[in-house]
Image (cartoon, rainbow, N blue to C red; front, side, top):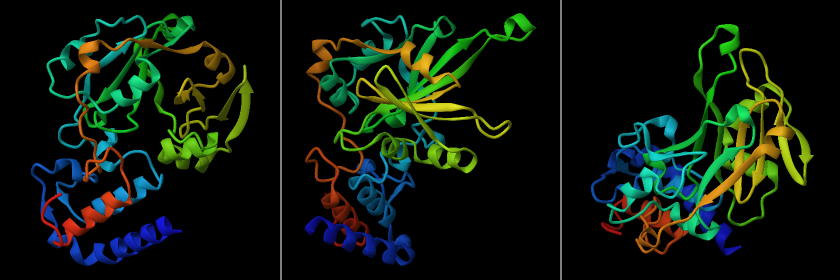
Length: 294
């Protein structure tokens, strides 16, 4: 009940203040991790997003969305792990030069290694997973899988790289059902899919999944499932076989990287290792001038 009161109070204040206080926003400098909406200021909008994040409304701040292409998030990073990569991956070597490692390593450590997404399907033998810079301090980063598609070559077409899946960590609480996971992890995709198609359910080898048919010119067929602590949005119309073939191998983390500190994550302004209503309240207080530092 106390949490609900805090959330309600901050939410009401944010909504009421957003229309009159935006002009009073502060310029972002060393406090860039507070600018969760990515508009280069610390304002009421940051407080509102932090509040919404803290109660599980979504898993990524605007500043961490690859589709927005904020400065510093203009392309794929050195994280490019192919399905046959080993622990000598270039990304690891580059990270050894850094003072702190991406926040996602907290999850990697818990799961026993860095994911190497792969498939036993011969069509996806050349599979590469990459991500954007803006995901580095995200609690739930996106891993984008692409494969070298040669399916059109026999018909006179060209081979090309094509999207196969997007994955992220499953909800840490373990309390969400599969549909709730889909909405929380891929909210905009869920809204788009349900505009055109009904989402159906299925199961294979004890793994439940959601799937939908394609609509020509509007929606590509796809499915969503959970495996080995990850949730995966997969593009295709053969969920049962693709889920069976899909695997997540783990690349061991070197001791050198294990001992490095983690980057600070967006929204954690009081630096207590979690994003909560307290952080939202502090950002709000800063935005309206009640406090001048975190």
